[in-house]
Each structure stands twice: as structure tokens, then as C-alpha cells.
Length: 300
Image (tube, rainbow, N blue to C red; front, side, top):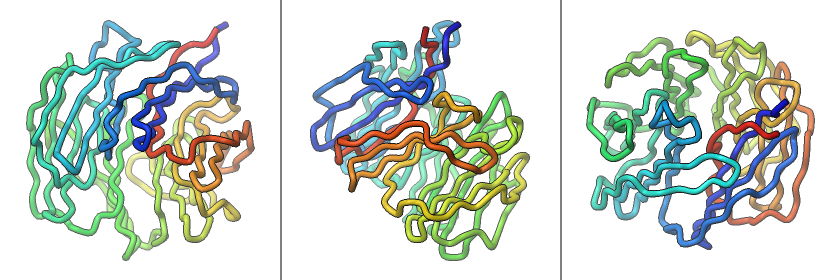
């Protein structure tokens, strides 16, 4: 029986390199390497499958903030991944602080300085984008905006502002963004926020990581509520990236941690907010700027 495998994309801007890795049963192996990538990409995001008839196809969105370049790629996501460009927009708006992809082939661009958010939809073939919503008067102090969607549920956006420990959860439908809940009194030191099934399989979880304190806080955010599942202390304070996915453990969502300072990667299983180490890797590049899930494939 085939084992579920997670494909990961690692991007090194200093070398202009993208490398693909596959993780199954907690073990990682390299499955692809591409040179000649731009060193100016600041945002790389996985787009939902642009073609429902070709399950091994997905999409990647690349954005360079310095020159306002947006490029979409079709990702042939199998045991030997490769990408091909479908759209290049040069001279696009250079001021986007972040770009967040939703689960319906749309993405949100946020300009923190201007307090502006714009929603765009990607056509099914990835060859064009269309503005579907523009929102002004937003707060200019959001530190983190991220999205999550699980098993056909609505696409949600989570906004976090550290100074006051405020989190807001929104739904996204047809270019409209609607507030469903606001939460105060959250930890004020989160530097990374990711989502997954960290408790029960049917419950959506949030992990907030504090690099300052070396702590991880797990919350249940199903339906827009927020209740703490667990808090874990004694973590490294130097984790550069945390990537949730299924890595072959007992829990439905595991975590990959990357420490650029130590050039180290570790993969953990997560069950009810409790972590157990699956594998550890040393001697990684210290220059990986982006690590993201690029797809899922069966591993025989």
C-alpha cells in the first residue's frame, strides 16, 4: 500500500536555487534541484491545484517586493518535480508587505503602510489574474496575516497584532472579507503562526511560536473560536521556519523546524499539543529563505 508523502520546496536566494524534497514515514530525501532562480523573491506561496483534471499539477506564486514582479508557475508535482512559467507581471505594485493565498485560487495582498488589502483570483490555467476586491482603511499594525482551510471548510484569514495581543479571524468569499471573531489577550511575542490538526482530527489548530521566549502555544480555532490546547516551553529561540504537514507520524499534522543559525532541521509528530521527534538533520544550508509544502504524492 502506498504511503502518503509530502513534497517540500526549499529556496536559497543567495545561490538562486530551488530544491525539492520528499518526506515519508518521517524520513527526507532530495528529489529535485533547479538553478537560475531570481534572488529577489520575497514571497513564495503554493496555489491550489489549477486543474482539477490533473491531480499532480499545482501552482506556485512568486513575488519580488523590490521590483514589483509577480510570476506564476505550474508545478508538475510528482516524484521528480519541475516548474514552468504561466504568467509574468513586471512593474506590479512593489509595496505589498505580504501575500496570502486562500483556498479558492485567490490571494490577498496587504500593504501595511497604506492600510490596503486587495484580493485577486487566479484563472484555472494560471495564465491571468483578476482583481475581485479592494479594501481600504485597514489597520497598519498587523504583524502576521495567514490563511487556513481544511477539508472543504470556508477559507479563513487570521490577522495578528503583537503589541496588544490581538487576533481576528475572517472568512473569504467572492472577494468579500467578513469578520467572524476577535480575540484579545493573546501572547504578544509570537513571531510565527501556522495551522494544522494539533488536537483532534476534526478540530483546526493554531500554533503560535515565540522566538523570544522559546515557547509554542497550541490553540483550537475551529469555527472561529480560540481555546488553548497546550503550551510547550524550552524550545529553541532560533527556529527560522516552522512548516506543518503530514510527515508520517501518528498525529494528523507534524511539524518541520529549520534553524538557519545551526543549519539544522528537525521533524516532529504532534498529538494533542505534545511533540515527539521523528528525525533530525544537520549540515543543511544556512541560507534557506523559504520552505513550503509543494504537494502530496503517494510513495510506494
